[in-house]
Image (tube, rainbow, N blue to C red; front, top):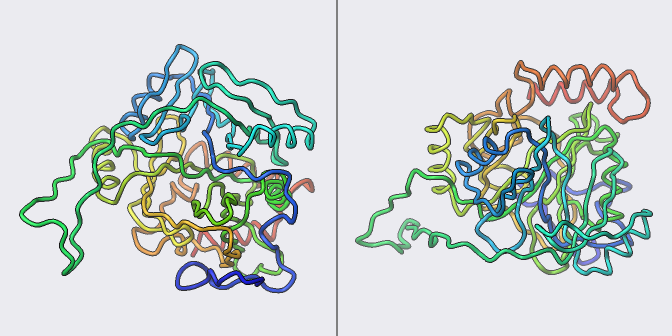
Length: 378
């Protein structure tokens, strides 16, 4: 594997690629983005959105009648930008370029101009549209927010290795302070085309592929994708793509300090009437401790901690997609998390299934539908 070491130990993945399978990276990408910058949403009620955000652990970076910007404790740009609009929707992600010249090169490649961003955020951006129709910004030189005060790390005892003596551990039942944006997951009807687009234009690389049981010969249906910063370790995934009957937001994830912070923050959210979707547990792909919640507009958001960090030497792992394979430990994946609990969202997805399997402009055919149904049963 060209000197790269094996990534497929333990629970990372079932095995590596077979001859002829997807390499998980582009040979000569246009640019290599260095991270997610922020996510953009529209919502009708910014006060309600801000109230949940504070309970979830965000701080307000900026708020006007037209826009809400939410941040974590780490320095940098806001994690989320929410604009007031008649209905709720996810507009798309913004990725950070290493240099302003990358914006020009990317704009030339897709026929898009580099433009100045609003004064409230600063910097420059080029706007693209991926094959699913999702708007994607790549930004540079945005205004940097200073770090916020953060609690010191917990002092933990590990068996005979003692770091806390004559002192107690009392994690407050309080909002889990968000440190930073981790990743976003989106569903696409054109998975392979969309995957290759992100690898070619943004220089992302695949950490793990999942395939429907019994359908590996048809290729993967989900990929966990990270930025390529060479020898610098980065999150196991910054973006995850999954094949489905519609193009839609699935969830986004935000890092908190540790398990105690995550668990106590969940207690606080429950005390204030918010709805847990699934958790607490530890994932397999990415290894992070997770806890999923629904915001008042129905968007799925995740607290996570202790995720895997990879450099660019690891080749993609390959594993079958199963509901039971979503976690190493924790409660079974809920119907809400899987998107199959009764309600408007599952009804829209059901209607999308009928449209997708009856059309020929997407990759979600009848056999893929059977594969997805098998996943839900496992």
